[in-house]
Amino acid sequence: MTTSTSNIAFIGGGNMARSLIGGLMAQGRDPASIRVAEPFAATRDALRDDFGVAVFEVGAQAVDGAATWVLATKPQVLRAVCEGLAAQAQAAKPLVVSIAAGITAAQIERWLGGGIAVVRTMPNTPALLGAGVTGLYASGCVDAAGRGFAESLLSAAGKTVWIDDEAQMDAVTAVSGSGPAYVFLLAEAMTDAGIREGLPADAARALALQTVLGAARMLTESDVDAAELRRRVTSPNGTTQAAIETFEAGGLRGLVEAAIHAARVRGAELSAAND
Ligand SMILES: NC(=O)C1=CN([C@@H]2O[C@H](COP(=O)(O)OP(=O)(O)OC[C@H]3O[C@@H](n4cnc5c(N)ncnc54)[C@H](O)[C@@H]3O)[C@@H](O)[C@H]2O)C=CC1
Ligand SMILES: O=C(O)[C@@H]1CCC=N1
Image 1 (cartoon, rainbow, N blue to C red):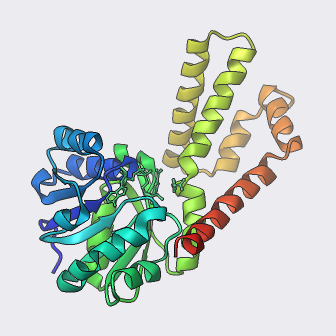
Image 2: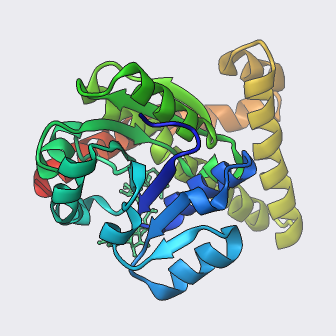
């Protein structure tokens, strides 16, 4: 039985694992209950020093005594990682939570030897601030307690959204997993454009970044939708109208659609290429 006090093993201690561990620490979880396998000594030492978690060089050590395993390596190495842990998985029957893009719950279950409860999830990097969002899909082997534990684990990173059809997980990845990078790109572009229009670099950056923050808060804290919020900024024949018309004429919506489609397709390719 997986409980909130039992050990959690992270396989891979990179950027996303760090964000999730940061969220768990902020929730007050005992650092000694988190065991991280990470081959790079510098990454391992930083996790131990920053969070006080137990660190190990290889997965086999980290999963020892852990009822929940979080798979947090790149998709390209996940098959080898799982096959290396299959014997321990068959003995311990852990709840396995994957954050890997593209890789399906069925692939992970097969690589671990079969009959394993797998929750496939897709968090995003604002998890570090507890402001992330995670899509979760539970395979048939996951019971209500497993679903509940996975949800509580990922809720340390922010909001959670259950997805019933696993085929939609690549779309989740394309919208919210990769999504922070789209917003960062917009912030970069707004800063650069401000500089080109004559603003000092520091001022352009401060103006662009605070605008992204303020707009995101309005989107999530007000009770009107994005289109209405946009209309309220856009005075007839004013400055915003000039900018929005330029975005629409340049095909911004179509470009966003094409970008999110490309990300979704890449998710499916990652599954096929690493099977
Ligand atoms: N970066 C992001 O925004 C998001 C990433 N993801 C997913 O999270 C996973 C990890 O991504 P990142 O943290 O960005 O990558 P990363 O490269 O920062 O972390 C992966 C870590 O796994 C370690 N590793 C490699 N082989 C290992 C092994 N055999 N055993 C244990 N650890 C091993 C690496 O040394 C590295 O520190 C990926 O599958 C990615 O698709 C999911 C949501 C968002
Ligand atoms: O770029 C990637 O493949 C990963 C998955 C979502 C965000 N980063």
